[in-house]
Length: 433
Image (cartoon, rainbow, N blue to C red; front, side, top):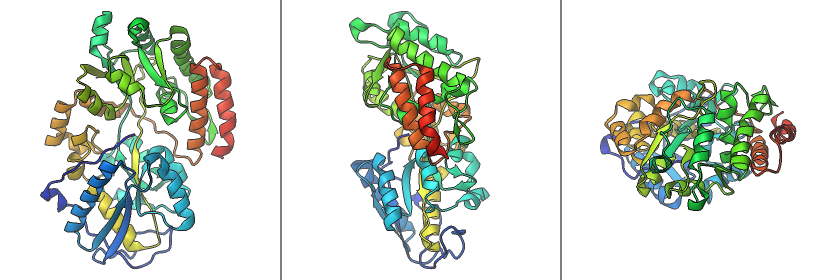
């Protein structure tokens, strides 16, 4: 669920994509392609949601695009002080009419943004064969879709797998994790890896109550046949959800084999420093692991009865409608260029992220990626295990906080799994109507 921006693009890549335009009006909510003049002068606003350093790169990238498309001006900014603040800023902008044409957004915001009435509907546009929509993983496409309406294009695709420290396994005399591991195997290994005298934990889990807490539970729920929702009603408090959370409770409370991170920010550095044996994380972690010089491996998530489903946390470029056909069209053309096979291969792959498109597997950049980041191939293959998507529903954010709080209480010994999940379901029901 993280993204960085690449500093350079080749001259040849700059020639890809179409021109934008700006001027004629189309009523909001209608097909934004109607009346689009790709040659008309147009200005669009792009909120990147990135760090200061990455924002500079975004400005350079926008300048390179507009150099090849001189009728298009792109006003680039972070949009907010942090990516987390973008949703609040967008919501305020909808009220005041100051929202952008394109914004970065976490996938978990998709439902709320879709129901704002301010997004473009890209369903017909992405269905054009020239876009290659089916090259993007299904879970990412589903995240961008709300009740048949496509509100954006994935900016990043990822998934959770099991990253492990080979030295700690060797020191404990344990065989490395395999793709056939069960959650019992995971628990047993975590217990043996834990060494309080050396401040070593078998694994780690966020108990901040954030989405980082919540989404790690979803694969364990799905593997047992459970569902997050039944229609618009909470269903995560089923027997499957209770059993999944009970395993985590047993590891945290009984075995004391999990480092419980109150902030989301500590467990990855502890893994990189050799104090955590296994980490359920994604490809975004590989760059810092590489920089730490850690000898590591990657396996798909442990499974239940042979089911090794994972969860993907796609982030999006959401495109907004201002009732101006040319602004809408220029935004689409820019994002089509940005997420094309040629550009993405020189962008996401160069910084350790997975490629957006399956067609990038044959590129020289992908070959360099898997060479530079051991485990990158495993994460790419693991996209096939991302068989379900987190709900695209306006109330997901509130439900996630409720579930995260429940997980946090249980793993710190303050509640039992069934009662905590039942309470979270009761609190969430109103938000999901």
